[in-house]
Amino acid sequence: MLDPKAIVTIDGPSGSGKSTISRGLAAKLHFTYLDTGAMYRAVGLALERQAIDLADPESLAKCLATIELAFSPNGDDDVLVLLNGEDISQAIRTSEMGLVASRVSAQPLVREKLTALQRQLGEKGGLVAEGRDMGTVVFPKAACKFFLSASAEERARRRQKQLAEKGQLVNYQEILAQISKRDHDDANRALAPLKPAADAIMVDSSSMDPDAVLAFMLDSIAKKQAKGGRHGE
Ligand code: DC
Image 1 (cartoon, rainbow, N blue to C red):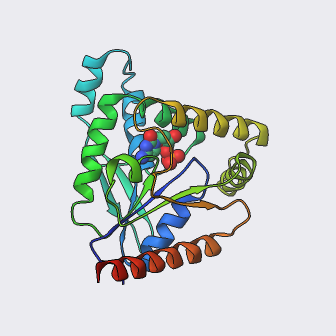
Image 2 (spheres, rainbow, N blue to C red; image 1 turned 45 degrees about the horizontal axis):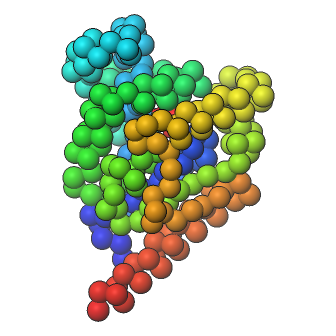
């Protein structure tokens, strides 16, 4: 049995299925789901609305001090993202906001604020945290770490399908280019770049459906627990 106060991290590039899998894993483990990408998107939206110049640290710091983020449960398997009390859950779910989030996430002041908030939200444990630096920076002592990936082409296909379901028709090549740019920027930034933790379990979901990924992860967690128990004897 996994300690109810444990933290499980799932890092990986955009479109690798992290959200679906993290949500599903949290439900199976009866843990809270923490979507840290949504936090970067929310900050991106706030900075964009106020036309903050990222090269001006003073106005960036001032604006960040006014930002309050919160998550509020919405039914059984949904969470609303609140920016100073306003529900922005839909507004942050566009490809453009993904690029904006990626840009602001390279700012040290932004990472400092959100890393602190994420650790605070993780204090009680019982968390499945998804993002880019959950296992490497934010929760280095997490009980179980996964790095979920899929080929850029497969991720672009999935994203195109997702957007089409929401009525947004976007060209495949355009999505592939956006995904490749975001991969490059997220992996090459100086601070908390996208990379697997040394002790992360690698999962390539290119040819796996979400149920297979979930089953693999639950099995890996059980095996890790069993091993940990034997070592502790
Ligand atoms: O997971 P997502 O697509 O919602 O994330 C949006 C951007 O936020 C992503 O391109 C990089 C940034 N991000 C980050 O830097 N660190 C995290 N832990 C989560 C997201």
